[in-house]
Image (cartoon, rainbow, N blue to C red; front, side, top):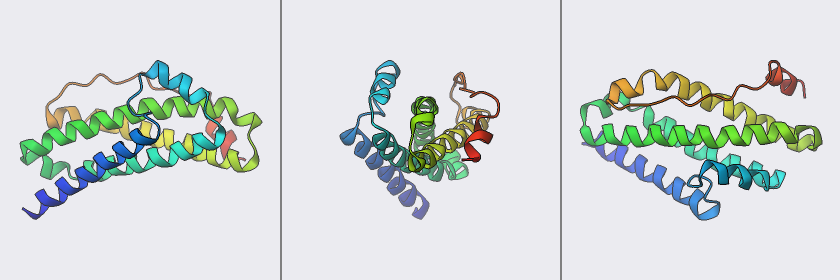
Length: 165
């Protein structure tokens, strides 16, 4: 019973984080084409603020996904795992657009912005790795279908060049 209560509270917190993003920006619910245009029109500072919000949602997804074994035993929580996985996929799509945008802006960014842009790019890589590893397990574990996205792969050496800055 305690685990059920904890998981329900954690999922409520996750929903609150999504609602927070929705009230501030709506990036989580825009169509990808509209989102790309929206992101291109953001200032560098706004990109950095959005990264912080998205990071909170990602951390929430990871926390819920850690409860995989408990969720497998309870149908309600299996459905929550599916929704959290769908949020992870959506996050990947959003953050991949952010990563492409920060790479395009990198040459004109200030030193401080470059450091933040590097964090956004690292965040993209972290989400991509989590999605790739989860995509092999989650659909089978929780019995749903999933078509993996085409993963954005930056030019060879991009991460190494960013690390030098």
